[in-house]
Structures are given as C-alpha cells and as structure tokens.
Image (cartoon, rainbow, N blue to C red; front, side, top):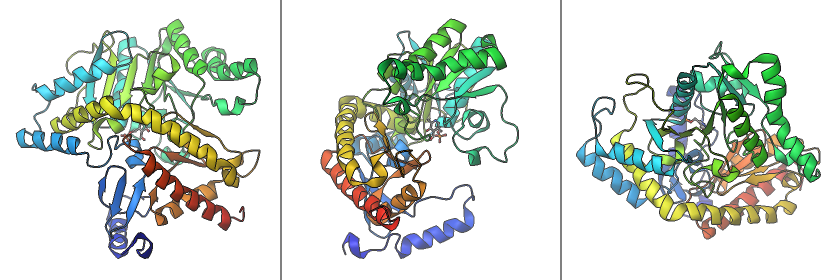
Length: 447
Ligand SMILES: Cc1ncc(COP(=O)(O)O)c(C=O)c1O
C-alpha cells in the first residue's frame, strides 16, 4: 500500500476522532485530522499506516525528534529507579543535575537559580509571582499578540486571540498591554525612520503608559516573547528589545523573557534573547526542554530567586523522568542540534524565498524567523490583506499530502520542525508544502 492509496484519516483514525468528539472537552478540538500512531525523527505515522513529515514538532516541542534513542534510554533507565518522590520535600540527584545544567546555560552574566515545573504556563505564572515578590510591586507590562498560556495568571498576559479570554470573567489585575514591534512594517523605510519605528513601541511605554495609566514605580516586570510565537512568528528589531532593557534598568523593573517556544536551541542559540544582545532577569522555559516529556523551568538571576521556603512550589515539578529526558535533550542539543538548527534554518529560509515568487499568496507576505522557527505570511495583495482562507485550506491539504504544519497569527504558516531535521527531509516537506499551497491557491482562483 502506498501513501497515495490510503485515506487521511483512514477508518481507524476516523473512528478515534469520532470517539474523541464524544468525550473530550469541547475546548480541545484538534484542527488537523491526524491520529498519531508512532514517530521517528522528523517523520510520524498515523494509525492507518500513513507516513507524514513533521514540520510542527508537536508545537515546537520534540526538539530531538520523535523517539530519539538517547532520550528514550534516559527515560527508561530512570523509570526503573523511581518515578516520583516530590522535590518539595526530598532531594534527588537528577533534579540537581538538571538545575546545574540550566544554570550554566542561563543567559545571565550573574549566577543563576532554577525552579522546575510542568509546563510553559506554569513557568510564566511562577516568573510573574517571583517578579512581584522580589520588587514588591504588582503591575506587569505585556504585549499585544503575546501568548503566555491559559491558566488565570498567564491568560491575563496573553493577548493573542479573543476566544482565549472571552467568557472567563475578570482577569488577574495589573496587566497593561502595549504594541509589539514588527520591523517588517518598516522594511522599506530609510535607516533612521526604521530605527525610529522600532523604538516607537518601546517609547509608548514611557510616553503613554507611564504618563497616563501606571507609574513605573509600581511595575514589577515587562514580559515578552523574544520572537512572538502564536502571534505569527514576529521577529522584533534588536533595538526594540534593547530599549525595553533600558526602560527596565531606568525604573527598577525586571525583564522576563518567555522562551517557552523560542528557547532550547531552536533559533541556533540556547535562547532567542541572545540574538538581541540583551540579558533578561528571568527566563521561562518549557516545550523543547523535555523533547516531549512535560517539564518547564524558571531561570532567574541568583539574587532575585531568594523567595523563602514555601513561597512557591508544586508536586510534580522536577519529575525525575522529565529531568532524565531534559538532561539527554540538552546534551544532544549542545553537541549537535543547536548548530543544526542554525544551518537548517538558513537552508529553510532560502528555500522558502525561492518558492515565494511561484505562489501569489506568498508574494507580498513576510517570511520571518530565526533558525528553525520560520513563519510564512499568506496575503491576498500588496496591502497585505490576510489570506486566512488560503492558509486554513493549505493546512488541511497538507495533511492529505503527508505533511504536518501549523498555523499561527492571522494568516501565517509556521515551520518549527525537530532540531535534528536534515536537508533531505526538509526538501521533501517543502515539496509537500508547495503542492498543498498551490492546490489551495488554485481552489481560491489565484493560480
Ligand atoms: C511563548 C509561550 N509561552 C507559554 C506557552 C504556554 O505553554 P503550555 O502550553 O506548556 O502551558 C506557550 C504555548 O504555546 C508559548 O508558546
């Protein structure tokens, strides 16, 4: 049986989708009819035996690829020893080793401390609690387009899609949203004008927010994604991030970077913030850290993470199996995959630029990203009217063509494959992307 002869989803997948419909929370309704059976590296297979190239990595999670033998071995060996003991009450070596490793790679010149948790949202919750506790201030500045998670505290910071907040009542107070810098809009400006535009968003905080709505002395933190993820893979101008650092320094505000999606080598450096020549005070990490095992971490400058025993904790944070997966992941990323992400990221970017003239919906859109975090914006015209219908259709057709790819923002397709991917697999994935997009464009009458 070849890929072409099998239905996607086939009868087995369809049956699981129908059962899922009856029992899973309505808030979890997968956009893509792919029913996972197993995976290896950057390829996955569904329960009907269809093969797919995975350029989504379970939303930028499976950093070392699916079922990397070293990660699987580390998990298995740890599982034979013990599954849980509770780091809030007892000590164990593997948790300390992971914290030591994370402290070594933290993007601070100061020594670092680490709090281990279970997810991205939990790392954000803890980071904001830490900033409030350390500064004794309540307010936080976050950005439009940001996604920081869906628990109550993280949700108050999230300003990505209204459906994520709608119906949940009053948010945690003290959050002020401001515009995020998108240098693409300034591309055709002269250098000084572009510089000015990149600073406008930062100026907005000082000239508008601090003068009209909230005193800087009451702001605990500015939290930003160094590259906006769910917001559409928006890479800000370095000067914007540097300005934010300056504002933090001027007013005793902490800078929190949410590296949940961007961190752990995805951009070719441990942390995306390193591309901007800025040191944050607190880092949130999760996703790629455990290659798929649920784990998150807060990294902080040593002198900030001085909260007393009992001030913050959890039951499962630093779970030994998740720690084993994370240690194996970090070793692989350091040895090989971080450099691979940089090299394959350039390759991917060049290949997408080559495809651009062939696709009417790509022609006027931006292709933006660093390393293996690249977004392709699909638009209808020079005014960049979002081609959301084409994006949605192309995503669905990609499944039929054996490709996992994710949407982001209003009309962006994002490429965030496992960091171990090679050029040959990328080529095959891009061929399937090319076909899927062409078909969506033909259906929309653009080709
Ligand atoms: C930048 C960022 N922060 C936080 C989160 C929330 O992470 P989690 O879903 O693990 O709670 C996400 C998830 O997509 C994210 O992309």
